[in-house]
Amino acid sequence: MTAELISGAIMAILMVLIGLNLSLFLLYFERKGSALIQDRIGSNRASITGFGKRFGMPNLGIINTVIADPVKLFTKEDFVPDGADKFLHTLAPFIALFPVMITFVIIPFGDTISIGGHKIDLTATNLNAGALYLLATLGLGVYGVALAGWASNNRWALLGGIRATAQMISYELAMGLAIVSVIMTFGTLNLQEIVRGQGGVWFGFLPRWGIFTQPLAFVIFLVAGVAESKRVPFDLPESESELILGYFTEYSGGKQVVFMLTDLAEQALIAMLLTTFFLGGWQIPWLMHDGFHLPGGAILAVPALAVSILGVIAFLVKAVAVCVFLGMVRWTLPRFRYDQLMRLGWKGLVPLGLFNVLVTAFVIVATGKVQ
Amino acid sequence: MPPFLYLFLGALAIVSALGVVVQRNPIHCLLSLISTLMVIAILFIGEDAVVVGFLQIIVYAGAIMVLFLFVIWLLNLQTESGPTGHIVLKTLGSLAAAALAAELSLFLAAPHLQVKMIQEPAGYGSLESLAGKLFTDYLVAFEVTSVLLLAAVVGAVALARRMPNAAGEGASDPRAAGAIRAAQASSRVQG
Image (tube, rainbow over all chains, first blue to last red):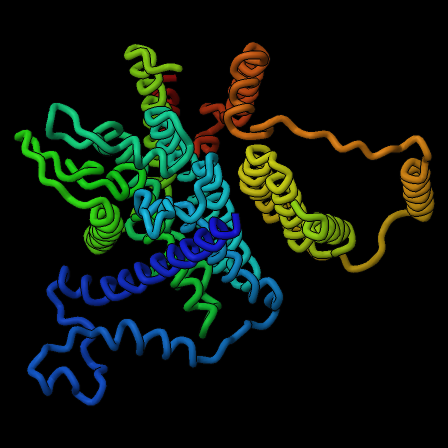
């Protein structure tokens, strides 16, 4: 019991650290990756006494994006506007960040691993009601932005807050429906079991990932996830050209960093959830417990410990790849208009999600997979 | 759940419930209510009613409280400045509160009240047991409730739908409004 608690706590901390590091990677990609996409040079000024240049390396802007920018923001004055609700203005960033941070812990990042005779399931909390936990924490993400907009005593901030709230509760529904069809397919709400269900192959070569079993749900979840994390093309709550910065217009210093971190962490979370539900989580195509079963019938033996470690690496690689994809979406698509956003959510994704649930139910009944 | 944690969470729930009543700013009251609901959800989860706890967070804290927030914004409720209300109402309210407190203390002090510990069956309150009950013993009631909710949704949509003949101002879509105006113009020409 105690050993379980300790290993769970360690894995929970590890998971949050992975999420934070992915956010940092996203921050770097947002600066340098966008420069790459838009054919610019991007941030390359700061360096530690020309360290890289001395060895003939180009300045990759790592110091700029990962160290200089956050430090600059943190050392700025923390300003609370006149007439603002000081208590809520201070509390709002943390209400925004908290639900995202606690959601990281349910994501399974590996299969069971045997260390010194102990079998450890590589997931911080092996909740049977994992998907319910996910929906609960995602639903709480609204309050941070809504209260930030309200507490700032600023019309633009309030408009941004209202936009964010309406957008998030609209797309939560579509996201929930996508999750429902995944739950129906794998017959469990436990995220680790959902990943386990994605092992094996069809027709001898096609891995049984969620993206192949539930392609429509994948699309719905992807779109709703980008909308949920309030990124371009769904960044209406903070659209610079209309609302300055939306709900965090009146924030500066450390609190602004917290809001930016929330955005990035949400994106990292969506990437991890996409990986878990649709890209097989820690599954590697054709890799079973004893080694690779290649489509031709050949078997490549791999020791059990290596299989577990490869699984963790596969999860991280997939999560980073989805993060890069989300970043590329961000720098490719223009912003929606608000009525387009609402129409896509309520008239596009929600009926599609319901349709997908219906089709999934029909297929499950027709194939006789009901217990 | 260890007793000290139960007592701590219970005290937290009572304090935040008091905050709903005592505070003057509607948004602060709402936050107190959310925190009350969250603490009660944690109590549920701690007492093995995992599904009820999560559903409480999803439905109440995550959805209905957002609706409350929108209502507060829409009505533009401001901080109440001072005590309001008629002296008769205040007297009656105080009397009712005192009666409730007396009733509660009488009930808790009653000698017949005995605490009985019941050993819950294995898997009690889990997702599997709840779903099993819901989809076998109570299937008809469950389905009938969903039909009732559907009827409510249809009714709400029917009430909220504006009639398109209200001079074009009823339609929210500018293109639809333009089409209505054009139709009206053409009917006027024909008339």
